[in-house]
Every structure is written in structure tokens, then in C-alpha cells.
Length: 370
Picture 1 (tube, rainbow, N blue to C red):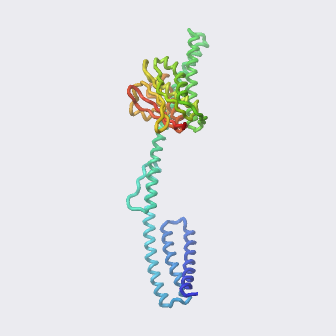
Picture 2: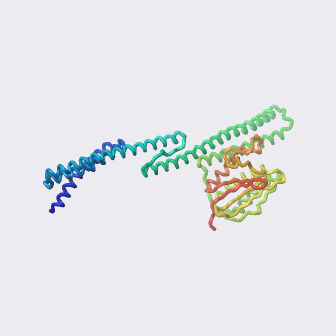
């Protein structure tokens, strides 16, 4: 075998032994600081070189003088490599510690601010990801606070709306029981009206709880919006006549949609009832449906006079009523929240904006081919 191959073989064996030893050391200190790991790696590199040199010298390929020279060079390299590894390790560890403290700040409720100064590409990428996560977490906190606020308002309003009719029902029942009711038939009709209103409120609460729990099951079928809107207008016509409001639905295209007919009928019903109650007598509520680039857009336009700009983002929040009055027409503030929940379950979206004389609620649903 040529001398060059023998030298390479002995050098490889010596270096491999040093590398195996270094791997064992790294395994033992795997939970220690990065500085220690870098020092071991630098030590393995130098030790591998020295072990290979000693193996070659042992095989009589190096003289004593040459071995002394090589050993001295390797020793100097070991010193420089170790110092460099320690300095690099301390710098990386310091940057990691600063990053840890910054991450802890947004975990405690603050915003993430990346540490000043240069950083490795990996630490810089981690800083960017933490910054993006901080933004998302801040948005999530804002949503949670808004949701908690709406829940508190809902509990307060529902408690009030339940207490008032229940007190009236008890008073009327006691009057009938004691025989002091001047017009028993009128009392009975009023009791029936209050019971129906309470039943509607409980139904809305149940529907909203299903939506929030993700338990709303849809039975999708292909339906024409023209038929869906026609049925909804027919159902809302008695309420519109009672309030002296005109219903208009002459801008409805016969476009097909894949929806749950029962749930979408509830969406349309809630939007129409809301629009009729907010529109003054002799006003108009217009329903339209058309195709758009986003899908199928269904709109309900009322004559309420408009919604304050600061209230527009809250219109679909649970418990929002748009008025501080505690009158039955104000509702429980659940109808539009149910609308949004059902539409989002259909992978659609809801919006509202002011138009001349009122506001327009729009529901966008995914388009159906054909």
C-alpha cells in the first residue's frame, strides 16, 4: 500500500477516535449552555488533528522534530479556537437571553420588542416570528375583551328582559287567581303574548349557544335565492303591515346557492324583522340578491336613518341593540349575532354600511356553479 494511503488511514483512525470521544462528551452535556457545546466542537476539531498526527507519528512516518513542531502548531490552534468558540458562545447566549426576556414581556401581557443589535440569521428569524405572534396575541386579547364585554352586557340585558315579563305574568296570574281581573280575556291574551316573547328569547339563546359551541349542523341543499327570499318576504309581510312598512323584493336574481334552507330562512327572517322594526311607518325595506366576484350577495336595506359610525363595528356583536331603551321592540340583541354565526358556518361573511336614509346589511355566500 502506498505511504500516502497509510498516512491517510492512520490520520483518519486517530481523528475518528477523537470525534467519537467528542460525540460522547456532547451527549453528556446536551442540556448545558451553547457556549460549552461550541467549546467542545472546537476542542474536537483540534484534538482530531492532534490524534491523527500522533497516529501517523506512531507509525514512524514523522520524526521526533517534526512531531514537536506539529504539536506546537496544534496547541496554538487549540488556544485560538477555544477562545473564539467561547467568545462566540457567550455572544449567542447573551442574544438568546435578551430574546427570552423580550418574549417573556409579551407573554405577560405586553408587546414583543426585538432586542437591539446584530443577531444570527436564526435568531433574527425567531425574532420576526415572535413579533408576528405578539401581534396575533394582542389581537386575540382585544377580541377576548370585546367578547367578554358583550357577554356581560348580554347577561345584564337578558336578566332585565326576563325579569320584567315574568313580574307581569305573575301579577296577571295572581289577579286571575284572586278573581280581581276586570277583563280576564284580555289578561289571558297578554299572558300568551308574553309567553311567546319569552319562548322566542329562549329559542334565540339556544341557537346562539349552538353556534358558539360549534354544534350547528348544516343540511346543505341546492336552493334558488329567488324562492328563499320570496318565502321570507311572505313570512315578514304581516309584521310589515302592522308597522306600516313596505317590503320590496324586485331586484332578486334567481341564482342558486348551496345552503341549509332552514337556517338561511332564519337569517333572512332576522334581517327583515330587524329592518322592519327600525324603519318608520311609510318607510321601505328593500331586499336584493345578485352575483358578484366574491360570490352571491344578498342585501336588506332599511330606512332607519343610519347607524353611528362608531357603532358599525359592533352591530353583529352579541347583545348589541343600538339603543339603551329597554322596550320589547329593541329585542334581546341576539338576532344579528345569530345571523353572523349562521352565515359564517356557511363559509360566508356579513357586513353593514350606511346608505342614504338608512343602512344596508349584506350577506355574502359562496357561489354555486351552474
